[in-house]
Length: 167
Image (cartoon, rainbow, N blue to C red; front, side, top):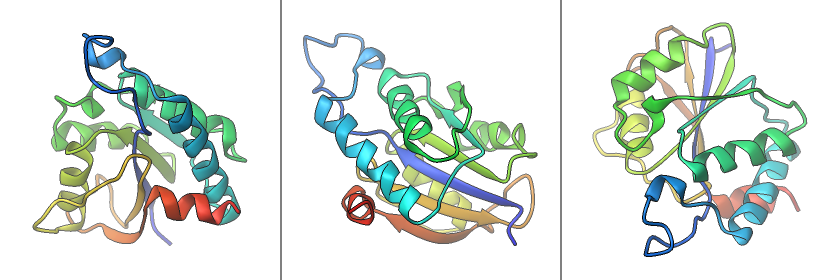
């Protein structure tokens, strides 16, 4: 039995960067991006995966992603925001954030690439970053806290696979 199940989630499909969104932090998910995330969350329900806590980057698209999972999952996890998960955040800051939630056994982090892929690699002791598609999720288990590089990658699902589980 792992002490901590850590879920890393990349935000869903967002509006294109450009003149409409001069402040990238305000760029929202597309309607299709939200619909796909809802189905992905239902895929997690189908395999009985839930979270005790969601921690999200403060950017609009990640907060919206966190909201979709919080609404759709059978267990309605609380959401907190952490600057550690913003694009400028560091793996060390994220690990510090995780330690704030040690009483929770299943914590989901919603963030951005390339940060998530680099964090995942560091947590499992891999040389190369994992590549997260938008809406992709992985689960890494830890037997000790704070989590060090000895995490065990349990699974890594693309958004398409998650949606298939919902069918």
